[in-house]
Image 1 (cartoon, rainbow, N blue to C red):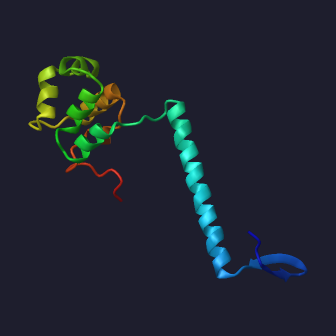
Image 2 (cartoon, rainbow, N blue to C red):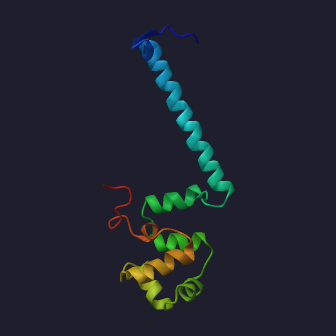
Length: 136
């Protein structure tokens, strides 16, 4: 791709390059493509380094559709029983059961402990009506 640019100088030094709009749009598209490639490369590095994980479509669907409390979805995805997760989080099994059933909310401390045990963010455990993740 060859470009036809008009160079504008100031004090004898190039300061601006003016290109036809179609060439500008192609350059912009190429720059956006390069940003996409960079983001994809970074995502792959995060997966390879263990800083991120792939979430199965079934889990995402259950979370998005509100099929069950997010805490339950993540617990089941991690293959943990209520008793094991409760022990790891330092709470009673009945308390965990009540949170999953929506009969009780978890304190910030409890939600942090559960999130840590499940290796997720606290926001990932909040039912969608309480979640403000991504909102400004």
